[in-house]
Length: 291
Ligand SMILES: O=C(O)CCC(=O)C(=O)O
Ligand SMILES: [Fe+2]
Image 1 (cartoon, helix red, strand yellow):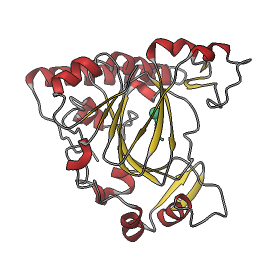
Image 2 (cartoon, rainbow, N blue to C red):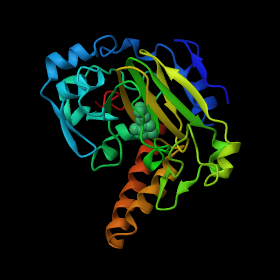
Image 3 (cartoon, rainbow, N blue to C red):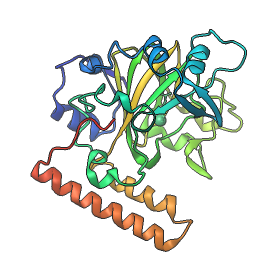
Image 4 (tube, rainbow, N blue to C red):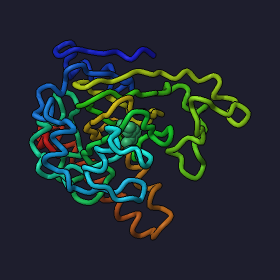
């Protein structure tokens, strides 16, 4: 699996839809986010001067933006640099609405998560700012919750991604208690006695730089590592292709609790999906800036 990198105008939305989205093949868009106001604006200085006091919790510890930036820029070496430091944009940095417009970059659509039917309640969707420092490693190899596909838009610095081909998914040792996570805890130095099949897996590693956007197909195992001080904006995509898997996850996540509640929520999602399908057919426009 070669990770293709496409330049502006090299691929139409239809080509993307048929060749990548439907087939679940990752892809890097070279200049897709250049049209965003966030492009070139999102820098450590920008966040330090405007949002220095803004707090978020990483691994159970609360940090201000200034504290996070001091850590990821190496100005504070007194304690470990946490990763990933995340801010929910709509909830925690609402001033940034409009900086990622159009959110879909002309490709990430239709997006049922933008429909009013899925705006209610928490369906695992959010537009988030990720901040990291050199060496900041995403804590596990995983597939994204709810079988959503992810769009990772690198806006500052560099991040290395590792993706594992779909046909090799059966060799990824999904944790039976948490099937979104792999038990393989040290992919750079794997314990082949515990994970013998992983010897046959061919990871694909590549770097995304500021201005580049990565499409991570739903259900694809992946992980990431920040190489420099890094900032990216990530959001998710769901539509007719991943909706059946999404719906199954909605049920699986909730079936352990109250059955009546699980049935009601899954029923709601099923109806919301049916409405989105109709909206797609009649060409309803959805807000493309959900941040
Ligand atoms: O950007 C990263 O560090 C990886 C993010 C990711 O894969 C996730 O949040 O699911
Ligand atoms: Fe992920």
